[in-house]
Image (tube, rainbow, N blue to C red):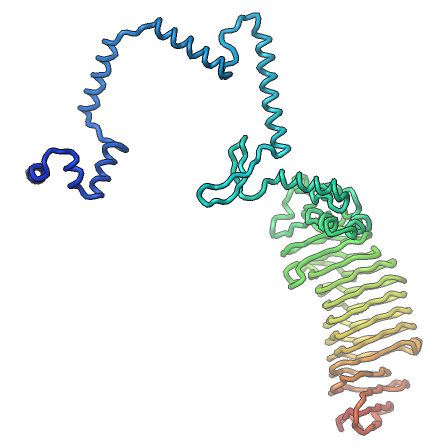
Length: 526
């Protein structure tokens, strides 16, 4: 306490000395203060003044004494009220005061009518955009839009004005300038194929509307809780499994699969309408379909891209193909993987006259006992490029019963049977391909196949394969290392390459190998 008293006395002495120095003039005192001290003084005086308890009590006592001593003139107050009411009525601020009870219903009707009129005018301004006006910002000197009803201010043109301009343009230029919002409301009433597709060919505006993202069917992966979702609460065109999306599909629909796993239970999927199934075209391993049963594609058109189809690890499926293209169906694919490991039978079957597919960057593997990687039968046709057929328990590719296959720039390897076999009047064209380490033969055709069959390997090499009765034609045959050639009563293997080298013919067992500018290693000539 003594220390506090000493500090207070020092402060008082310092203040007294300063007061004697500058005097008692308020302006002199203010000038002697520093800017921060003047700001603090002003803050305490004007912004946040400090009042002691004694000051507050004294001020309240003075106000009470003044109110008790003051006399109120009631007549003067009533006269002032009358003058104020008359002014309000003239200005229109007051509709009515103290009406007669008989006039109350009529006054209520008038009030409701005026209120409805004001509300309708406000709605009309909102629909016509009359409540928006262009003003200039005083700070940046830039134009902006101001709403007089709501007080809203925006830099961009309001949506209602843009929509009105689009409507005016549509009325002027007719159908080709119809707004996208209107077109998107109309397009759902059309079948995606061929009706909506035909509309997309009209103009750019119609194409944008016909391919709007809202028409795509989205399927939730199991990682997003798809199996526990309530189907009744899903948004439009959203599904918790692929089977539901396929069941609701109409011709031309697109089913989009995000990254994750999708379970397809027995008996699988039956696709009877043209549709597209889209996954991740950059990496199909991101979108995985765990398939129990088979996918039967009987539609005359379809597309699949960026999807991995495989068997579940706990599947007990036996003797079922993963994909069956039947009854004139067609499915084109790109960047897909089909792995039938864990099941028996072929991986993919294309069967029936008119059944076909155009495939690029496809992986076919894992066939079971007695099943090949790709089976084409009864007039089917497949055009496959940049693909791989490998690790199958039987033949890699088998075409039979007047079927056809074109294989370009692909690899057929590590298959237990033949790389490619043609039976019963089938035909094939093989260009720029590799046949590596197949167990029985690289390419083989039976005696019933017609001579119209064009078997050609125009590619880097045939390695570690048995090759019989095949004609190898091309400009880029580099080696036939570690390969065995038997003609089995046929014409043998003919390897041809245009070059300035000396032609030579070598006998290999019972077959004849003819070369032009291609040196066959000595160990093959026995």
